[in-house]
Length: 220
Length: 220
DNA sequence: TGACATACAAACAGAAATGTATGTATTAAT
DNA sequence: ATTAATACATACATTTCTGTTTGTATGTCA
Image (cartoon, rainbow over all chains, first blue to last red; front, side, top):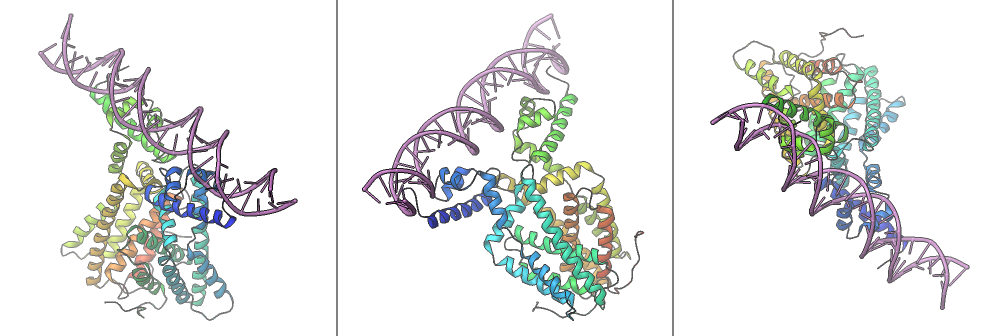
């Protein structure tokens, strides 16, 4: 068999990408061979080299697809809080994080990609570019959080104990830490459930008039 | 040159291990070749194969050396709180974490090893054993934290907002997250300094009578 | 209806790493 | 002073992956 129509070619490209993700996940990026990827896609290395320059090119294509919804949601939240709104920043933050958790938890492809980037990758040489990309994304997320907490501070919502920067960093670490823990233990931790409860407790404890509890979900 | 005395041989074994750590760090575990490691140690592959079975054996030897001081310190803290002591669990916890931070920050070898385990490794196949080892260590750390926060809860130190398990998980995520952030950005984040401040704010906000600040260090 | 470009498959050559086998200079013991 | 084991270095054979080249059947366009 040989030349297919353009749409067919695009399909095989997609097939190769998903196959690559699966092989990367199971074998790690470094030891994954193009032969394995091609066979996992039901093709040969010829197809791989037609659509991609080499393994790195494949990796970049996958890397570009990995998007954590945190960033977008929080950036949007920042702009929503920007106008002279009477929204409670901390309430909105908790909602946005919860929504992001749900979004991540329901996207199997994202989960695979995040797992690859976190635990199936060695960040050296050319890979460092991907690493820097992650750091930039993290920095963006943090700056969004800082803005939100600054807003909360001026609102008087944020307890005096917390500087906005520290609150943002703590919040960032909890969010990313929860995602990591969820990635590592497939079934042990539910991101939206346990993660949501934890974020609720945390954000609640940062509130200026701390001490009250408005339980967000039924807990045993 | 050939056979050395026993102590000499042990020395070359150490040389090989530190060389391996350096090569793993710079090239990643997967693409590091035994030839590179041997040359970095000023030796040949013969020496490597004499002292170690293969690259994995080398990796295990290094993996065994990677010890996060969190675990020991917190376990010791648990036993210290165990007796009918009038120690404030949260104060002691903060001190232990701070001490662990200082300890990690001053140990260059630990930093290299942790970096390798976190960012220069692909956890597949045989490597999954190392991964499981890390998870077990994490579980131990968490159980220590849970005990500490349970103690704090019975003392009345812990705010009612927090369940002990959630507080422990949040604390765990902050600690490990800070270490990770410190590993990723060599100079940006000081573990003992910025990390200490953050942990202080966090633990302070979990205290039952929240709102007061007893600054632990001079901040600008 | 050719003719050319496309979308692959198959074959080939080269590099690199691995494991093993062998060589060898010491050292320690007898 | 031999001898045998030790602590490596060196040489070899094999595998594996990679990049490229060549082949080829099929769309597509004039």
